[in-house]
Length: 126
Image (tube, rainbow, N blue to C red; front, side, top):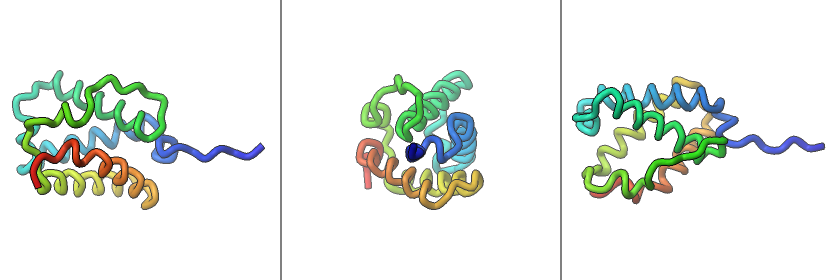
């Protein structure tokens, strides 16, 4: 019997790898003077909830077994004023995270393709 193709979730290392990558990305974004403004006013509990929702969303979007119970990206980001510079800063940090976790180029391209599919729902200004 032929082996089925692994999902992006499996090729990225599964739940624990995604969780660690989200932790790293959030830490990088919070330390970034340009992006830190999006974490202002969030207590530790709110940040943990945000982190968990990101893990579940990425798990689900990459073909994993998670259920994402959060809102859609347009609703979540509406009114935040995220612009193209913010988006690119986040992408730069994400690529750094993926590189540090030694995610292969083909998987990185798939992750970026997934993100670009929701960019219009997140970025409000050029």
